[in-house]
Length: 377
Image (cartoon, rainbow, N blue to C red; front, side, top):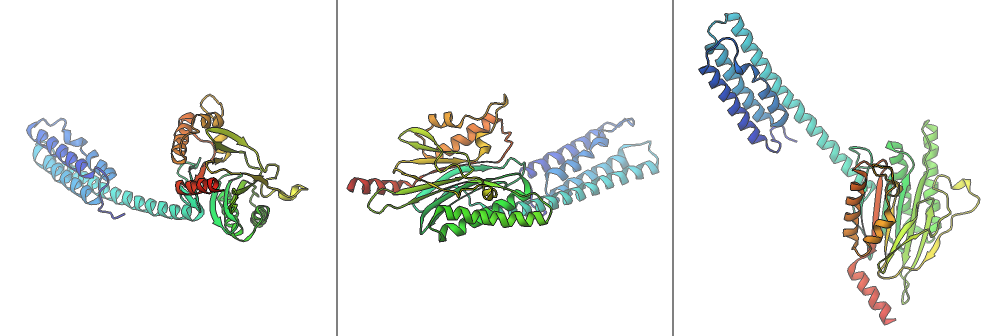
């Protein structure tokens, strides 16, 4: 950010401060009493400008302050010794110079923060695509909220990709917080994006994600940091040709998803039973997905446990299923906005864990085409 760029409201603040300085100086010039001069308290004016205004305007306020204080200390105090006048003027010079330096440091810090935020935004876009997601005939609305103040990425991951093997969705929750959780999530996400395009079976995609996390955990163990596991829910929908589309879902220790169909809400546990990624070698059975039969008007809601385990001020858990039952007729964009506002109101904005929601449905034109095909069949 340029140092001469004024923040919002900087011009009005500058005018007010200058008027205050000049007004107090006039009062001191009229009031010739030697005991107390109001201008002795004006040093706060350039300091306030340093916190609110651009460098150029701070210099202007400091200059007006210095001229007015020099006038007051030189001409309106009749009984001061020369040494006292020099000391007072020198103090005003120090206050003005300090204000200018303070403003410059503040603007440099703001510019550094802006650059850091830009880098963080770039990293987030590389790791997590911004919502809504669009892949093939499907779009996913929702939100991602990090529980860590000021953090833009965290331990939740999600993706939707259109592949030669159909549309594939994934949502995951990395155990823990901080940079190690972000690193583990990035490994799993990258493995999903790659494997989803090249492997026909959803179970094989999950295996590749497991292997990527195992390599990450091995490196973490060598560096003396904790290993991580990731819960994940994978879904796919394939075109059924002349028939209805075919779907499949596989859960790696993730919480259930919700199906919204014909105004009713169903909590579904299809494909459950698999261990979280990173713990797959502890089970004796391989992961197995479950078939599902999507219908044209279906919408699904995927989320992480930061939503279902969110607590209100009285300690009660967020009743996601009950809330969805009252919003079952909302379109995905409106449903996502309503859910986020309600969750923030329920928790008072105090989330203890990252919270991610994806509301997935077919785009309007795709849904109409699917209905037409079904009618023709």
